[in-house]
Length: 584
Image (cartoon, rainbow, N blue to C red; front, top):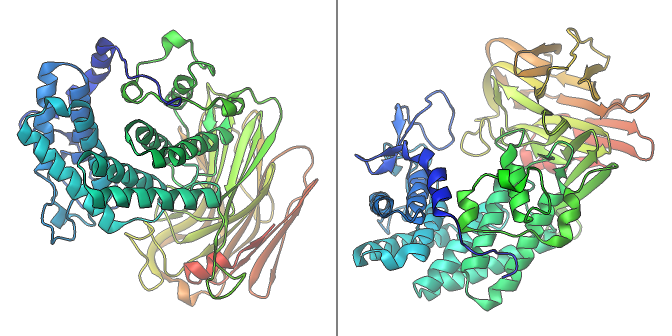
């Protein structure tokens, strides 16, 4: 297979890379253990102890121990696998059959919301163990792994996630195809083939991944598709897998900003705002040093790459060359769905990303989204690869990202119009696991924030920001300008503020800040914000906004394209608001 290299790694280097993980191993529990941060909000768990022993991380460590080539570590790996297998729900009549809890300390029946993705994540790791080392396992362990993997596969089949849940759709396909073939289970193998066909047709129709441009999950997708290339034996599947593999790499290339070496937005899901050197190293390894960020001898050993050596398609190498002039990428991530009985009427409107890659910065926005904490619907990267920085829009409810604030945008090159309105039936801290009840929240503060982070040593931020005037943020290399074209939230008095600390700076549009109070969105007739955002390029005439027939309409006359964004101002159900946006 031309996109995979040989698995031939230096055992000594592997052992060195693994050394740091050994300190987390708990020989008493035969799992890895970590201190637990009680103050951090997690979607699925209400655990409040001091230490956790995670199932997924333990399996990942176990597989690394098996791969090390060390006999003592091999024994440790098998003991961990036996321990974790024993924590799987094996009751075929149980709702959580085939999955694991996150932690040893918190069984499935006491989790806030069991995570069914653990069938996929843990199933993948168990398959790595048996495919590479099964011939060394005892008959008893081999059979235990077989049972656990098939339990996970049947859980995956029962759940049957749609192709829009990109990383889990791919991962579950891998488990089904490989487990069905390995264990001669025709039901699971046929399900894996059907699932691959469904994901392939869906993705090729839309032209991209619904879980679009995620620095974390696009790499997960890349690795899982790479595993398919390596481990799936069915010939009728290989052609589709190759097409998907190339699509992932093209997707990554289109959003690589060479001057900062950052993964430009917009991002459907992200856990950080700035990528580390690991992102560069991935590109350098997979291009066989054709794209070189560090001398090849300084490229650190990578355990994952050692056992899954991925190769970059040469036809996309140009995306990683130096950026000598601006380039704009407009990508349809999702074409939308038409109503089956009403020709031309959409149930879901398309999702479209715009990324402007300039030698000094990269600005990325999406046309519709929400403000869940993993979203990056509007994010700017600037600076240099040695000292990168970012600026992104967030919406806070009591200092945590508020999912029911909805984002709408339109962008052309260095300018973007942004509209914000509010759903009455959506999420608070999480889209589905922490919902807003009866369209009402209890709040001490509600605000829109432009957050600037990374290297902000040269940043100049005005101490005051007057209503009705734009605010300029000078970074020493570029200047951002932000306009508030409209801000109304019932009869609340809107305020404006700026601030900074050692790590971040911010510009806030404050809707409420005071004693805790109840806010019922059903009782508010007008709640909407309009923002114009640009990277200055000479003189600029700002955007205009009007309210007409219950809609906030913003316009911006750009040099070679006029932007327009129109959104409803009254809070409503999320589906109604998502379909009601008009933009160009």
